[in-house]
Image (tube, rainbow, N blue to C red; front, side, top):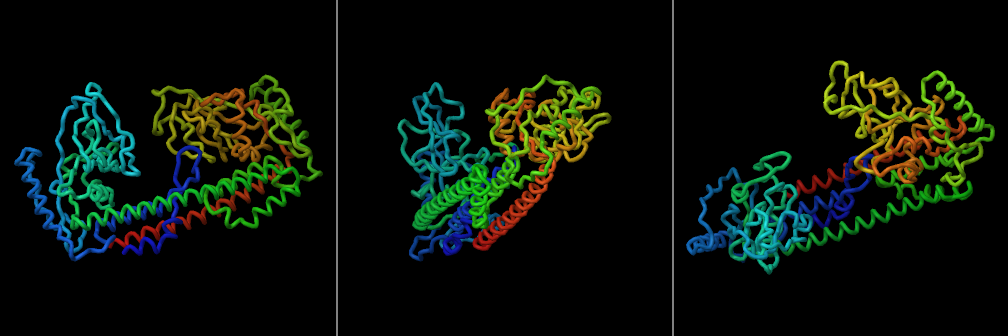
Length: 581
């Protein structure tokens, strides 16, 4: 059965799952799903007796359990442990799977004991749940406390060889074996169930069983609580555990250690390979934005195109390609310039005339004059026919509506309208989890119109400030106080604005340039002075068309990668399921 592990190494290392993240969409990070499933498979095979061969010369587990029962009776008689109420006999309905000959099923309470509790009376090593490295299954940061500083939960006595299992939020798998005799003595939190196996049975065998999918199923069945699930000690000790012969327990532990070390090695190799791949992608794409001439650009692009199928194989690399596409667009490198295009300076004059008319009609406010963009403020050199402008020259910035908690509702009500907030902005606008406020709180300008750029002006996270998305149609609602709207004064700018606020150039200028921008707050004045490269109108249309084409290609590539990931994940699941049947 061990061949299922070694014969499928390529699958275990290639089955990846893209992590979902909050904020500005997926960050492209990958979870080693295949290796995670391999670890689960190793534990499952181990506790089912399928990982190492049985040895007919091993003493059967039933003899071991007889000695365990005698040890327990003796310790109770000697007063070393308390006599507890007996658990009911194991029924056939409780047994989750068949075990090999020579194995036996037992209740956890019958194979070990705890050491009781005490109130610390001197300095002690305190083992709390936070002291456990739940990935490695070891104690990583025990505390040294005085008796006076002991928390009320510091009560459970543990010694070398004791297994501790956190009964609070058990899905975190804060489980480990005490590997040493601590000095001063160690005392664990009452958040742990304590098991010290009889007959020198290896605590590691029980710890790995408690991590196995089968025991996890049992815990999920009996635990209580949703936000803060937990099981009590009685539920823990009443659980079943398969008991192999003593010699086989040690062989299982040794083999699991060996295979988990292999998983660690595979995971490191996978991480290093993915990191190297992403660095290569970022480096090669970076050359496209740094070249000085069209000839150099063509050479750099040819280098990428020749290896396209090997470079763009992850969602992160596709996202990087998208960002590079947008950056090239606003640098004037994505489509060729046409000397016959009417220069952007003419477009800018038309916009200024249109803006002056709107001011005269009282439709927008007149702001303070903005200084021209100085050469030192231009992050890139724009092509001929382009112009650098301040955002305030071509658009108005409107702050959202302020409302009190008592005025807000999570559900629609009569004469209430929905508001977009920061959580509704993620490259595109979504309309989930809106808040509703009285209609009279909004003025006409605070309704979202087609072409508006809705932008997060304030956030608890500096990384989220400035994220923006364009409204593709009028929205029968507004936007909240922590948001703003950038509204172009001319319809001619809508399409270009639609993707400019997704570009690295915008993000770097808004989040990193620092002109009037607080850590978690984007000031209106900072937005108004933001520098924007403005192409001729005809070139804007060519840019938008090319961006749409390339982004669609990126989305198709990403969908293909996701389909391949799904297939590999299903294969990994199927192999695990088949192996444990």
